[in-house]
Image (cartoon, rainbow, N blue to C red; front, side):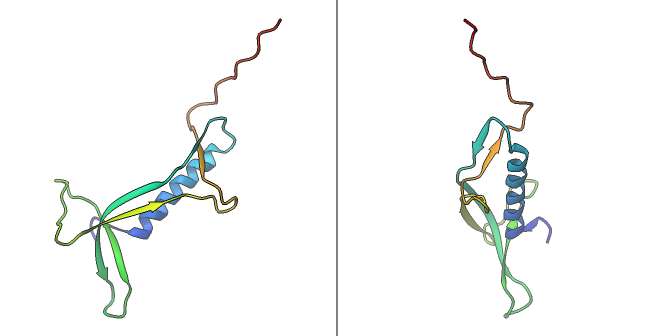
Length: 109
């Protein structure tokens, strides 16, 4: 399985990264809404374990020369809209840089 990752594994990794960013951003003054996420992959389709087995989609990593065989791969485009499973609202992540800058205060009298 050199150079191939399961499609579910790739999407789960993206989910984990977004979850980590949201967790790190909780309580930060500056937040970023995560809009639609569009992914495009080159995949190989295979049937594992014979005729009764399920079909698997393998994300193909390009070789050193940046190419993959077009005869054995298909392009899959996936459109995801991240939603918080608890609040059912759009996911927000925050600036993960240093502390939020101090807010300006009103000048006295």
